[in-house]
Amino acid sequence: MCFHPIFITHTASAPPKNNGQALYLIGLMLRMSDLRLHNSKSLPTELIFPFSWVESSEEPKTGELGFFEGALKAFDGERWIAFDLADTLKGIRPSPKGFASEPLVKALGMIKHKPARVIDATCGTGKDSLQIWGYGNKILAFERHPMVYALLWDALRRVAIPNFELRNADASCELFNSDDVVYFDPMFEHVEKKKSLARKEMQLFKNAVGADTDQSEVLERLLKSGCGRVVVKRPIKLESHPKPNHSIEGKTVKYDVYLPLLG
Image 1: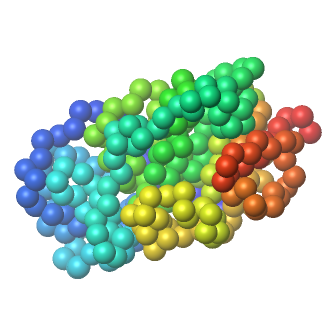
Image 2: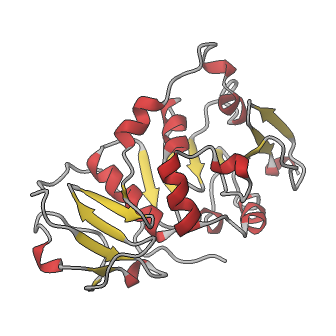
């Protein structure tokens, strides 16, 4: 089901000053407009979130958000977790065999032609988006889950990344250009997919986000979005539906390539 974004675009800016003391709890309900903030009067005046909230004094629950130590964090039931894109960038290393040998590069069609931009339909922690950005691509990243989007928004507030745009929306409800490439990495219920996340992120996504149960419907809409190529990341042992035009395999995952404009 498509929905209209509550706040659309992130533009990187310098991080605000922070006193590092107060804890701000932001309760996540079903929509961004349902965010609940604890102790809002002590929120630093120079820090402005691009969404509204109502004040709350309840204890944090799994999936709720808090702001402390200069970052927005989510509670996974045991600990507070923030996305650190600077740390993520440090962990992305090129293949020792060279750029052209990487399965994702091949799947994106970059060997013969660099896309105008890559649309990441499911940004998640931002790791895959940053890897694709590192190949020299312009990124338009979508994240429809409110909690995950909020964490990404704050991570981009702390680390400025040029040619990287983030939107809180369902990418499958958008229309794209024929020279755009859409990258789709849904959350599966399979163990192989869960192991691809760090332990702390796995706990958060398992408890607060869950699997993308509508991924078939989302893919169907993406194939009709007007883009020239859709790349779907799947566990290597998982059967592909619908059948792709071709597939590029890595060690544990495969990239199914769909060319919808070819018919």
